[in-house]
Length: 560
Image (tube, rainbow, N blue to C red; front, side, top):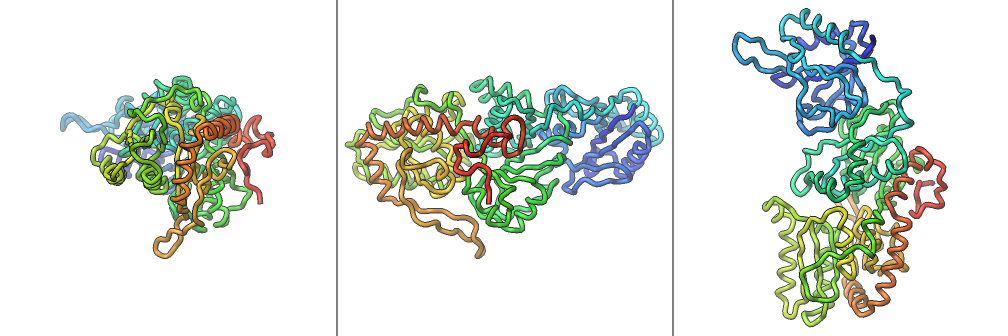
């Protein structure tokens, strides 16, 4: 019986087989006629290579308990036998050290229903002694327990492998969750790879229970797709990443993957170096972006237009709707302006909202400003993130006759997030730069009139018919060590004051504009539309024939 064998160890760790022992055993296994492919996984950033006839794959942070990479690697290569070759220390000096069984986190839940046989040398009763004896025991294990490699005929079409941290409160995690669910609803074979969830730090944290409780149907669909088995030879891997300017990129370094087709979904508001684009072009066949603003620097740095595509973010019309029950804010004022996002990001313009509100209104006006921000559990990080905003609010409230300002820290379940917007009367977002502008689109879908800067990402979906367009300066270049790193604009503060007063004084007109925007957002800017675009860009399933002219985005697939 022919089979693939995986030997998983880390020669750099003290509890692994030594390099000398591993060479002897691996060389012997590679000569076995029953072994069609033998691969060796170890912590390394080197690309895969062949070592004494054994293919070597690097596994970042091999010992990390919550790492999703190793289960994904196993599912891609689908070995018939996995040998977990980490030593277990001897309990007494007389007892020889043995190689232990598979760790508890390498289990059926992570590897899916096509679980290869996992055999630890220690649990197989093989002590770390004479290499010839160990090799004989391994041969018997393979012959008795091996399962042939599954044929690629089992694959149900081309699998789309979505890779990013999953079930976190980070924006990219949310995008991957919604796109994965929408693709599954379209009937496409999707595999979600939960990549290094334990690397989430600070304000970014796991909230799987929140997803499970507040979006149970979506959660079940997405969770079922996590690390399921698929044929790597007929798959497309989509990496979701907020690339930094000038980031070095190699196939098995920044983006470790084994599939033959790689796609990058890039976000961020920055310029891109030509060297970076050349590196990316060697790895990825297509670079996707949520807006023309994000994609344009890649094109200007040399990416062929045929290898770039805009796949916008979206909204769930069942959650973001004018009919959503409103959240209650602690104020008696009848009219409420709202801004919600990450206030420590200066591009969001929280400082401008505060200044304009203080100039437009006073304590006698029946109006309040609600600044809703995410809850941060760490007191130290909270002080770092919110310190500047809290000082701005404190200084504003210290002014004579200052209008009411509420700083609301709250995590809201997924199913109730529409109420964040319907609990207010106008959404304000005087952005300096945005990759897409998700909160603006969500507010529009909930029927709020929006005052926002029509530049960068939101320029793809804002228009005078759907929003109050805030005047702004020409783009300003930001430099680092003499090189341009990004661009931003400065919104017109006086115009922002005028627009906030106008919306407050013309409520019927602004409400009608908000409802018009809601109809457009809920019709043309859903996650289903985004998923169809993604499928069309990658020529997958029934969406591949969709005519690009029917797409709501200004430019779906970028052409010359």
